[in-house]
Image (cartoon, rainbow, N blue to C red):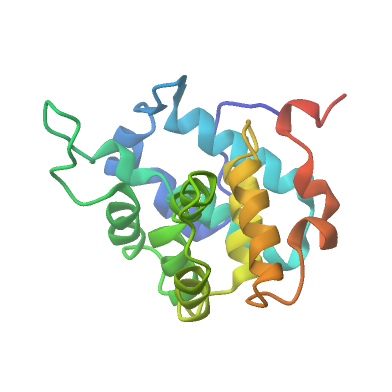
Amino acid sequence: MASNIIVPRTEIETRIVSNPEFQESIGFIHNPEIPETINAHICNCLDYTDFLQIQEHTEQLRLLALLHDFGKFKTRSDENGKLISLPSAKISRQFAEQFITDHNLLKIIGFHDRHIDFYESALHGNFDAQEFSKYYVFSYVNLELLTLFGYVDSCEGNREAIKWLDDTLYKSDVSKNIVHKKYPKALVLLKDVNK
């Protein structure tokens, strides 16, 4: 585990990885709080997907790992930090449309981090359960895959927001199961995998 080389396994992964814009993006710093490149984050997500060993979702999780954060490379803000470009997830989705046509995957890429906004509103006491339920019910997306990918995307650290989403989807009767109960390995952090 913990390689820094993206090794494609399918023809579509090869097309993504060999794309010049993708190649340019992977050197970009993924998260300024954790000085990690997009490449390192993708490699961690791919390694974590392998660790999970969920055959029915592996191919989809790998595509999501490769494509979900491309937009961070192209997102722009003004000097006050106000976004002056499309949001990262929307840019990522547009880029992904060159390679995949699966609407479920494209939707997940387009709002893979939306749960963080709901989580933060819950922390501040202004969570709107009705808005939350409507958002996820009418997203028409595979919620199990979305939630599983949330665990993959957060494999390096803070799991509070995705675990909150997982539990809240179930408590709100939006989802029929709790992903981390169905797949307990999803709660293990990447750093703890080889211990």
